[in-house]
Length: 459
Image (cartoon, rainbow, N blue to C red):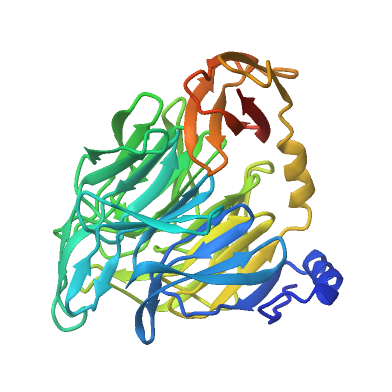
């Protein structure tokens, strides 16, 4: 049984015990958002969720509402440089990025090239630029690189009486976190409405809509370790589907097919063997938002889509399809409100479904009181660093090595990625840190069993 409540925006310390008991008893709660949000992205970092700039009943805005999942409270509202909607969001060590988007007005749209970057340690904003302005692009972080792919570079039409004409982009802007340098690549074909997902060094961009209004079965795969691209195909052409990667498998769920219908098919690609299997959603729909929490994938809300006028049509879905990899089974749940053009994210042991048409100013939060302890156990990758302090060569050794590949990253205290290498055998690795500045750094080791960090002192 669900329990929907409307807790206070700001945390009252005296109510902390009561709030924790409520979370342990109930799975779903509702929070009122400080600002209306539609056609936006949400990203999580360090136990906080950042709900990006968006459209609202009064137009586009620049507000980024920040929710602290640890304390169950709205923390602050930040501001990006330009009001807009349909910006792509991504977060990595210490920084949150909102890239591109549509600004000005729907009847006279401007596609932005700005990338607003918020440093969570300094509290300061900086900006970078994409190679071209576009909205509804896809953003992921793979192997120490940020990828901003595809999207709409031009748009005309009034969305109702006049068919919408779009120009889609194939450009992928790639930002190297270690060097701070930009480069570009290209998708195999220009498109928008792709499903993007990432795990480790692998990023996938599946399906999408082309400028002609048709949808595609193309799936581009990027390997950040090699910098190489490959292409495969889905079993059916579709756009506005949703994708997540869990345990080495890419799940591409739902979407809008070429005959203006929505599909309930979930295509599952084993990224090691490149073999396919399939599953079925409880309800056919596109435009879902998804996220991974532990061993589960959540696919939330969505609806039906008019490819001619480039709009979603009501009623919108309130369904949540949940895949449990440990149990290898699908279950369902239901939101209080159907939604489209919403956003989803996971922080700590909570899954957030926020904003969108149907509920612009509310976020529904699923809390799993059993997940936190399990997660803490899974993140215990014991490893040692010696010598520490170090001035040149050092050795990392994993306790009880499991022969599975691990990723090793070293960051400075500002969250900048300095080095990223693979530990192929999962047991030990030698690294040279002579080129790093003196001071305290953070070494992060991550793999299928979780993530662990330690401090490194560079002399």
